[in-house]
Image 1 (cartoon, rainbow, N blue to C red):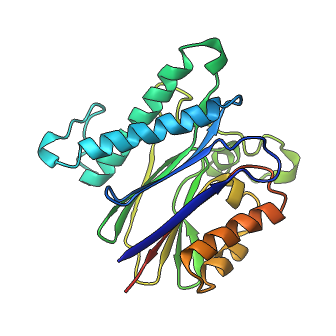
Image 2: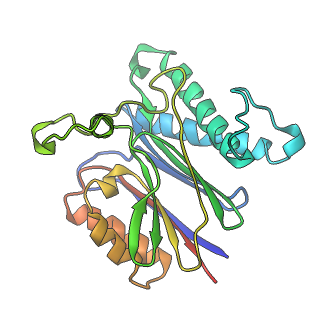
Length: 250
């Protein structure tokens, strides 16, 4: 059995919340989208991305009726192909919206999503919203950050993070270009494990040790999520904060 709970908070510094979340138990679909663009255009991008993914994944539940507008990768599972297609479609919709008017230029959104099939979870992301697996007291990041810092680290270059103000600059997001690279993973959480989906408003302010301690507190999911939100706000709450928790029960 899987239990879930999630919420989003404007934080302490922003006037509006441009994060959006989705918990669709019927589809086994969970998404955190962190919109960007200002003047509510970030919220528009996040809402458009989520609704596009939800619509495609609903329409592709019947395997005989599935369409693959970006092709099918036979090296991936069916669920992984559905995830890639859903995120690519979301990217296309946000990209097209950004071309409709000059004020929409630069709008985009991160996406971190999970499709649950039984206890198996297919994870997809673009941007720097993250998915973590909590197992036996330790926290492991499942997703890949699309940031300048991650790109530099991938080249094996050692740098002082404090000297680079653009270290968290996104190298891609949904809506940033016509076709994006979707990062994928599949995990099989064990009983008592948790999967957390969150925006950088949480993981950028709360350390992994503190997050792991909250997840292992034994509290109900609602209490844990609100503790995590409070943790980010106590650390300054400089961004919108969103978190979804999935707990695997015996």
